[in-house]
Length: 211
Image (cartoon, rainbow, N blue to C red):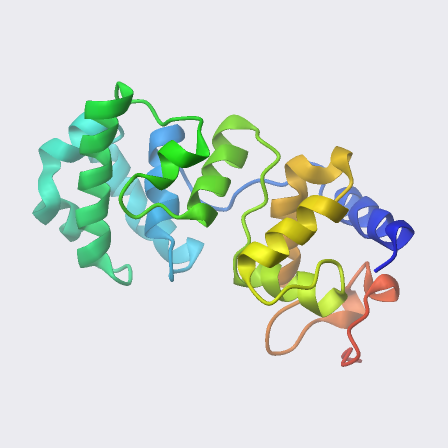
């Protein structure tokens, strides 16, 4: 995709949704971190069904540790991999208390050192909680970047690095959400809604759908 086409793509996504937001429900940086950890291999909708009661009971690391792994499991048992996730949530909460004064660190390495937190989760937290212009590549962004020709890559890291190079500086803060929402609702995996796509004319996908 050429530089002018990339600019057009983001201009149009921005015009359609000037202030994109995460679809995960949270009340503070800590609950955002927990929600993102819970969302691994799960849908935001599914996570949002489980977290209101959990966050009412525990919206700080201290309260989560006090709940304990067994009680956390009860709150999140509708979410896939809930046993491992409950263990990680309690463990990362304990680490936040012991090493970070109960605060979510604004540092990628420190975030990735927490149980259950990988590069994608760290990027989401840095972007949403702290306004860092990071791009977390999930399955939707990976698909959109490759399908459109925006930032082709064989791995999520390769796509992230390609996006860092091509996304206009003024668009980096919201690029993650524009691309993920576009992939979730328009450029869908099985049948992309190309007729409704605002960037179809700059997209390199050869299998565009029709009405």
